[in-house]
Image 1 (cartoon, rainbow, N blue to C red):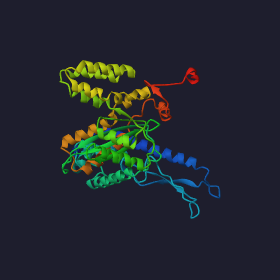
Image 2 (spheres, rainbow, N blue to C red; image 1 turned 180 degrees about the vertical axis):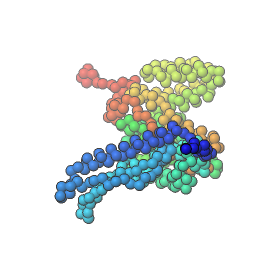
Image 3 (cartoon, rainbow, N blue to C red; image 1 turned 45 degrees about the vertical axis):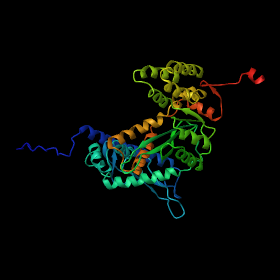
Image 4 (cartoon, rainbow, N blue to C red; image 1 turned 30 degrees about the vertical axis):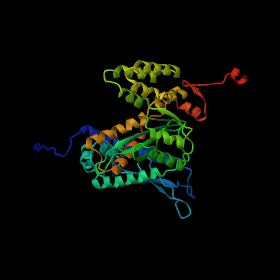
Length: 422
């Protein structure tokens, strides 16, 4: 006679009964094993021509490595690495090694988790609370993320930052440049320091972090030091256009270091500056008028709209009209570049969107523990964000900009036979 088991296992307080996550992990484990297997088979097929003197295959399967746990966004996933044996390796012949690009030899975490750590910090989670926060995300059985590991990661980030600051730029060129700075008040520092950031667009249309350093406010000297350092490390060709706000320090330094680079004032910053000089009751209508300027189809229409704005508001709000008119030329420089690039060139938002998170974290925690910690975490956040930056629209036009082709109102200017004859 069989007895029914009436013992019901109780869920432990730290355990999470989540069948969906269990299914996802099981599926991820199978897919990962299949991907590694396919990668090994592809490598063996490529090495098919390598044979021993007796005709046997030189490279053969050699079982699987020990099981290890990889931390992923859905928790720990167990995996085993495929091993290949080189039967022809000797003192004379160099050993053929198989290294999985999917599963590097010493990997213990997915790169997305390394990017998550500085984001958690900038969202208000302190270094000491990382383990608790990650346990809630990944489960209590999440290894490789202990406080000592976090501290070691921070040391690696410091080394990455130092290495990045010394990188060679002689093979790099940037067609466009965006410049901006953000102030962070650290609790252990007597005054706020400004993080100066430069993002560039390559001739292939890719956006990259070009320069990043802490300066004393947005002074001309701080910007000059950053620009001179980039030039000293090989960035010899000046960008065609730089976009930034009205901070005089950057433009003065740029004229000294890169006098051929043209200026484009950020229309978003200019809109905010003009509206700040108007009463709130007038701001909605003024904002619509400013938008008509920035979205005008050509320079002549935009200049007419600026003149109209000045005539409309100068009588009662002279400061607002003067704020707009004084930068008329620099605000409309983008018309001399391909129309496909206008959305990118009119604003320094590529930097502003990244620093929105930084400012949020500063408000939440009343400043970072130290300026060094803030600088390091912001650097890692920007590097992580750079992987998701969208390429420039109309990237096929970038080679023409590099070659010096003339554009008028966003359209390429071509010489007609009559012009050539003249």
